[in-house]
Image (cartoon, rainbow, N blue to C red; front, side, top):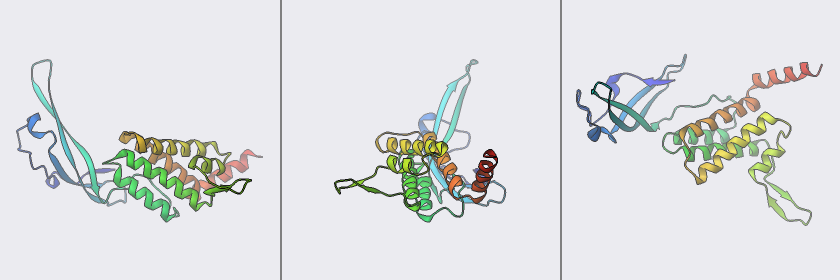
Length: 212
């Protein structure tokens, strides 16, 4: 929940109070401080990007200029998902890279989230290779590794496959920021399932009750 700390923290070099001209302001750089307003969080970060403006005429012939601020980067990027303190460091490192990239390059961010799933497979001891009958060692794809891990858990398989697909697509095509944010949500769910003790306890208790 990041909001502007205060208007005095804006830095918009091209802005002159009372003057709005689409040709002058579109593409201008801006910088601001943002502060998280979530309870108990005092996160403060520097954000930068560019100004977009658009002038439109209403039904009465009056002209209005709409200004938006498109974020392209953070200094000390905020956490976009909640993760357990027990999240392995290798996974945490990939998540941090993805969080920093999502504002500038959503496609690269989605690829990093896919990498986080690969590190998760490594941490859980899922083999990277398989030896064939003729003795040849074959490298397993991420899809094959995922299917061998919790194969009967359809919720895990569905969310992990969605991350894999978005990561692969991001390598070859341009994704929207909303696509990368979806991948973050899927990863948050998986991390909670695997590393949040309360989440696991609730699922185990529910399974036990359902088997009675």
